[in-house]
Image (cartoon, rainbow, N blue to C red):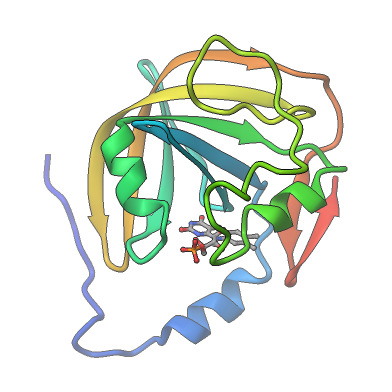
Length: 170
Ligand SMILES: Cc1cc2nc3c(=O)[nH]c(=O)nc-3n(C[C@H](O)[C@H](O)[C@H](O)COP(=O)(O)O)c2cc1C
């Protein structure tokens, strides 16, 4: 398959700040990716979740290479996408904080019972368990392509989205 790549790195026609400003007008849903890398349990808030394919079922998340979750995510080879509900802004803020020691990350966070080693956040709209099928270099991020191994639906209801620099329940 032919791949077309428009490379603006050298020309620097658009800055990261300009792209960020435009993307503030977009309203992605918010999820928390949780993982267990040999006993190290982490979670990271993401707005980059995308449904990639239905047959086979694939999703993608883009994670910054400088994120403290990046290497553990690679090592784990598996992750859970917790789709946040409209009333879970506090959870989204919690897992977007920098510099929280992994041991303190889970205090005050309700987890649901699960036979899996990845933490699953109580109150989410759905939990999607993925095995990493591909890691795609995407500039200062890596796109993790996850093959969906299993999923469970939680309560139906409003979703949490991020737009204009703030959270909304829709
Ligand atoms: C609404 C929102 C969406 C975010 N989406 C992503 C994302 O898709 N990918 C990513 O790598 N970081 C994303 N982040 C940033 C991470 O949640 C986190 O703040 C960052 O990895 C810093 O953690 P660290 O200091 O432990 O590396 C997002 C943050 C917010 C507030």
